[in-house]
Amino acid sequence: MSQALFLSDNAARVHPSVWEAMQAADAPDSPYDGDAVSAALDEKFSALFGRECAALWVATGTAANCLALATMVQPHGGVVCHEEAHIEVDEGGAPGFYLHGAKLLLGQGEGAKLTPDAIRAVIDPIRDDVHQVQAHAISITQASEYGRSYRPDELAQISALARERGLGLHMDGARFGNAAAFLGHPAAEVAGDVDALSFGFVKNGGMSAEAIVFFDGSLADVARYRRKRAGHLQSKGRYLAAQIHAMLEGDLWLANARAANDAAQEIAGACSDRLMHPVEANELFVNCTAAEREVLRAQGFAFYDWGDDAARFVTAWNTREEDARALATAIAAL
View 1: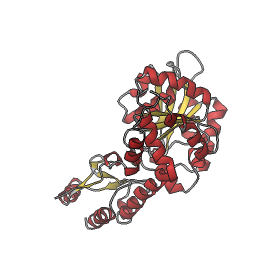
View 2: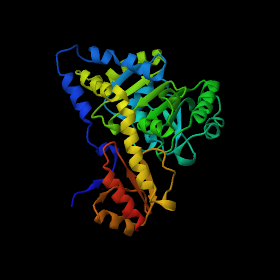
View 3: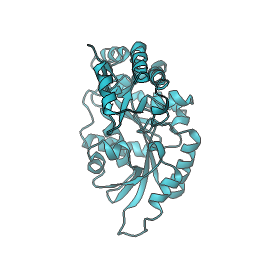
View 4: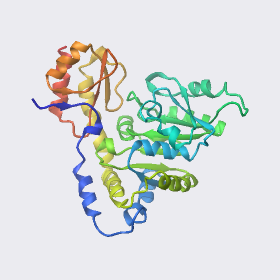
């Protein structure tokens, strides 16, 4: 029996346009990031966000997050993030490694989203003396680890607090496209007033390229040195840049995200009160027993358990309509 994969959007195929762009870049050019394809990224992202940007490619989301934060946070400082943020739960201590020991300061919030009050609850008790780690930055995730999307007004409130307190603001956008597709707002509004955005492409049809988009050019200057030191300045960087260009061309990144979100909504319609969180991107967290999960797996559906009594299903840009409909029918029949 063939499996219908809902394990992760990382399991999805690479989009054909990405392969074509990499093939087109397969010609002699300057090494590292001195090639024409890499050099054109700044202009491409500046057009997308309607403001001057500097963009650096890296191979992984972990590197994107950590290199971005390393430009804002000293080793003796801290990063405010949600207690279930990817940088806390799923990056194997990489923030501490890249930030040379800087601390993650954990906040709480429904749907893995931070609010200004949740951030204040973390930073206000910190005494202003050398005996305590001082917050240097805030990191939020769009869409969040539970597939929840920050609205523009929520982002504005967080950025206002960051500016008031003199803190850097980073956005983990591993599923930025899915949030943009759900919200229906321009990219600039989905990002808000952040200093740096980790713009995810691998989960959305890319192969091995993510972008760190800096809205502060001085941070980008620092990140270039840190990227080299961390071993992420690839010698044939044009192949990473080509992937990103392919995804940005004609808003393919947004079309792919819409397809993934549509598949998630097809499944969500059958979940009823089993849903643990509203579906605002391409992830579904569904209450179901171990026995019910075995029933679904016996029908050929592949997914991850989420604790003892739930499952996580993730759709992708190439999730087939018939697979999404079949999963929806199977869940409804439990």
